[in-house]
Amino acid sequence: MRRVRYSVAMSLDGYLAGPKGEIDWITNDPEVDFVGLAAQFDTMLVGRKTYEFARAHGASVRMPGIVPYVLSRTLQETECPDATVSADAQGTVSTLKRQQGKDIWLFGGGSLFRSLLEMGLVDTIEVAILPILLGGGVPFLPERGVRTALRLVRHRLYANTGRVWLEYDVA
Image (cartoon, rainbow, N blue to C red; front, side, top):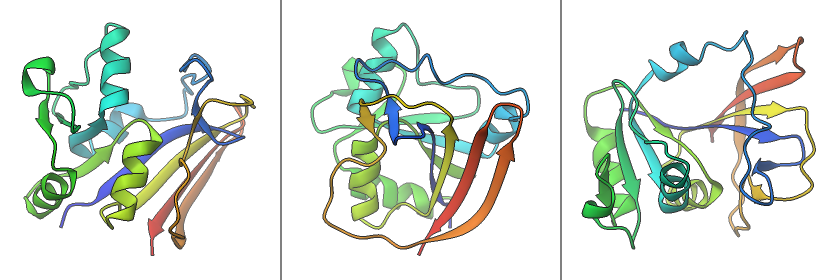
């Protein structure tokens, strides 16, 4: 079965973006193989906020070889010409996990992550912790009521930039 992998960058104080949505602090690290990472996926899941942020900044969620799905109860297919839209996150993700293919990249903000985690649909959490304190912004995990146990699978220190990469399986 395919895995849903939440793979994101986070500030040391737990934010995915700054108070105004800024992500300029997420810099490239020459030691990180982003092409190799992207090659592990053929499907991407994004929520409405991440999709709208990308579009507002002139970007597309489409990447070579990766089919994007926008999980939103408010956006319509006609508003997302570069992605498939679904209002049924649980049904869509469950179906995608059963299909043949590479892993599924859960990309972007914490709200969709929280929802899919609560539904038991997230298999792996991969977080690159960058050495910066933002002091506020979009949290890694918005408030929730369910405790989730994790098991450390891998870790790596990128000594030149101070970045730390952690990979956990959801227990």
